[in-house]
Image (cartoon, rainbow, N blue to C red):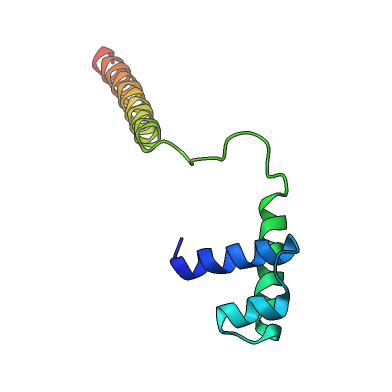
Length: 104
């Protein structure tokens, strides 16, 4: 965290704890009281958002590249097997037709 952010956070905490007034905090930070209240509001809203429960479980990391690559390779092999099965079938049909023609 940057030093200026840390100083702002410390000052907001002091104001919230009642150790410092908003006017004194704004003077310490060198800003207007209106700007102080805007920053305080943003900081407290961010804190509230950060404390809201998130989705249960671990966040998804997405598909493993190696698993994706292996799945693609598997699909290519499946396609090659299907192509070879079709070629074998065609060869058998042609061989059968050739045998019938030779018998005539």
